[in-house]
Length: 91
Image 1 (cartoon, helix red, strand yellow):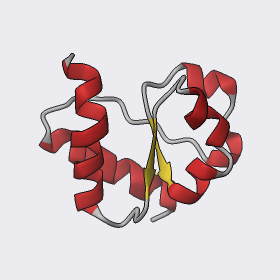
Image 2 (tube, one colour; image 1 turned 60 degrees about the vertical axis):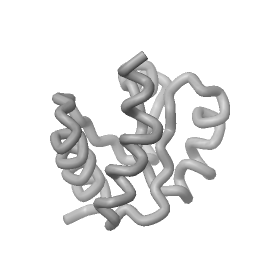
Image 3 (cartoon, one colour; image 1 turned 30 degrees about the vertical axis):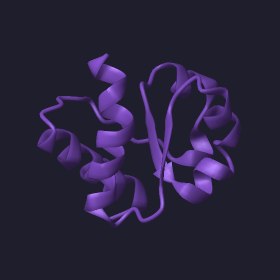
Image 4 (tube, one colour; image 1 turned 135 degrees about the vertical axis):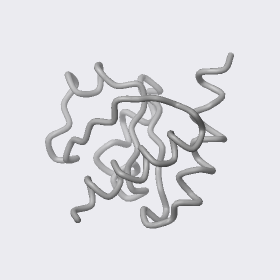
């Protein structure tokens, strides 16, 4: 399983555990454009990509960028969703 598919599956599973129904789309970081960014609510990615290619987007705050230290950690997905994503939609 590729990195994008792995992140997608883990995001879907973590959202489902929190009772959130969402369309989870995958985009390879090299292909991310302003059009892609404008059509999403949040971006999940590795810490390296968040601090590299997506640093400007993360800094602008236009779209929240959730940086994962360990894309294999299901616990990290749940923690990031609870801490960052849920508050965005419960206000």
